[in-house]
Image (tube, rainbow, N blue to C red; front, side, top):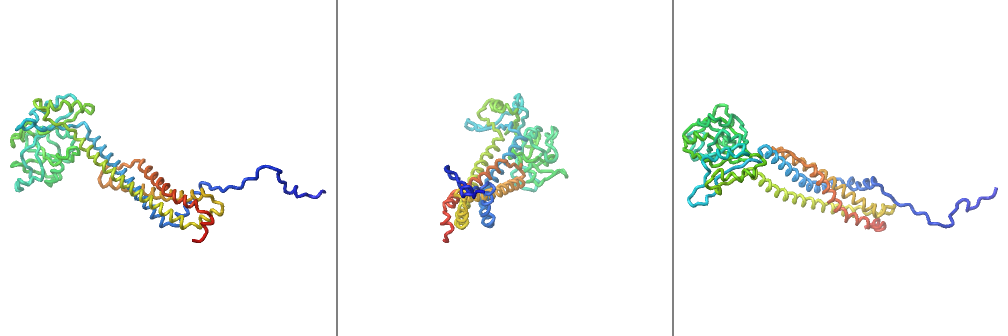
Length: 416
């Protein structure tokens, strides 16, 4: 047996590239693990910093949720009441000394317009409504008396809370229907005991109480009697002060164009035609401006939270110099250290984002419950809120993460 040589025990290639050294690897799950170290070991600081982000995200989500809920409630109201309602009134007279007025037969003529489904007029009555004759006539409580016909409730889309609206037989009798506000002012909540009210010297029986009318808030404080009894007792003019019209939805513009000449053929320029739903839409436009302002304030709060994260991460890098040095000495690359602190900042902001979204949803739900409106929370609000938090965290963590990555092992473990 021949002796074994050294070359036989450890053969080496005569030529060729040297074997590459092992490269340090950090798996995604490992990045997540090391990224949570700072959060788990400094729980109070984590909670306080996450709260700063949560406040900003809650403001953004709640603003979007409340705005969406308000829009949903507005949509429900407009769907229930319809945008196909018009109001005709006497406008401004262009003749000196002339008082603008609608024609005596304006309601009848408007009803002849083919797309018109309902039309009813009201005439302002020179009278006051009081609970008893012992109340001073000057104490009106802001209640107006309006003379009308039996179709007004259907035209307005008004709901009767108790009793009924004026019937054809009621128009000639001392019967009265109270708006929601008028009934509240007079202290009449129901018709259990056939309540009476004193209308400028005559007792009227309350036959109905209306619910609030969102499109016609001025009529909530009105009391309605029949036009015939108003003419008889209070010498009320026949010409209506306003005419309410319901038309086919696709014919609004066409009907609006012919209403002035129909209501007052002699002076159509003195007639004003409006859509009550435009008032609600204008209010929504004002609400949109406020929403934009609140979103701006939420953005400022989010920015402050991001600055807080950046500050905390800078402090964390200073406090953990030794840890960084040891990891670098054991083979961690600059990229590994950078990823660790960047992930830590993003996780911190994501935690605040989740808390903020939950808080924003809770605020919106509470607001909707208190206001009695439809609760609506768009999914995009939560996505935007959480996404904004993570983006802010990433931006806030870039500089501290880069600073940590630039520390050399020798400098990092050297005592300060």
